[in-house]
Image 1: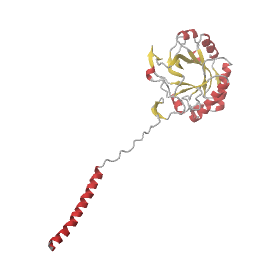
Image 2: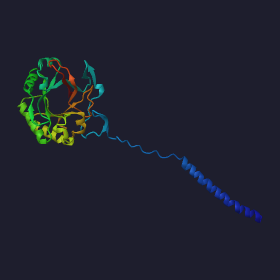
Image 3: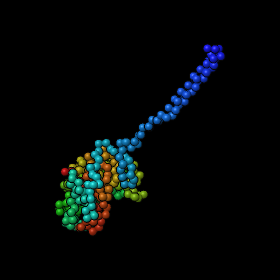
Length: 292
């Protein structure tokens, strides 16, 4: 090979090598650009939660541990003569009312004939302004009348307690009103926050309500009766710790076509505006569930 040819070959070879390196770098860059980016892991923000209607909005909550969810679904109910009717197979459902002196006088024979199986009677309460206790003027008469015609009876006390000591006082007032009378259904703690600025319960932190309710229920249980708690969905989801109150009967105010409260309940107040023969004004309607 001539000296000239050798020099040309020495000049071209580095160009080939450099060109190959450039091509290889470009190829690697193209392959990297074409390679699919890894799909980011999708994290469910509501893992372990359930969507519920809290009475105001659809919201996600974390269910309380150790408390069974409701066994009821919308298809377990239908309307019959304008009233919700349970058509499921796992429970027996009874029709009932809750009343106070405001519904007096009551013709209990007519109430029974109209298909009412049970009645929850107010025995007394605490005034939301002054905090003084009072008795229901019609309690004794309603207890006697309902019992006479074979209607099962339960009791509720309208609470405005803001301490456990006051709740215990209320429970003792309920026991005094019952005076040892045998009743089939629970004695319910009915704590409510009236829409009135003068109500003493307006400033109570709802986180304190479980301890207050527990004091009432413990006193009722010690008095030989079954305790229960009446509540609306807001209190049921945001105030009461059901894990601590799991031995108390639950009675939910949840007007509608079926009881959509997430946890299981014993009684369902489905209307604030019911009509019943023997009672001259509108009355709350309820359903009680007995597992077969």
